[in-house]
Length: 94
Figure 1 (tube, rainbow, N blue to C red):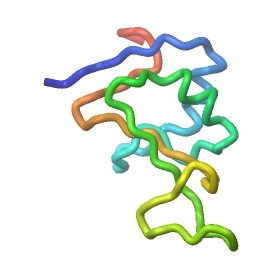
Figure 2: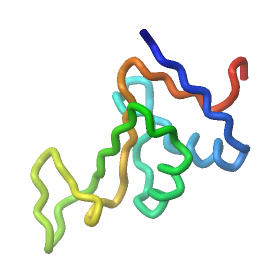
Figure 3: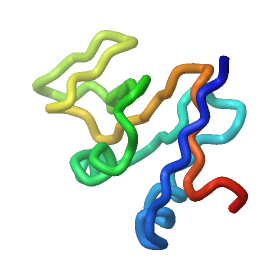
Figure 4: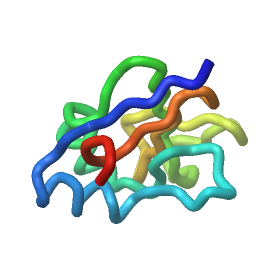
């Protein structure tokens, strides 16, 4: 069963999230979000069925495993929802 979530945001929040929507060919829902926006974005998005993956290169002080990055050293992050969850930015019918 597919779960559809309608998140009714104001224009500024829709514009912010709209900048980071992933292409349909990606598994993520949002990607490339600067870590400086972590608190703001995660408060906006529904928590149900949500996963966050941190992204960034290794640094002089942190050598990351190939498929993992910790928040402290991340530059950006991506938001994933389960495959059966569809998030809409707006009300039904918009």
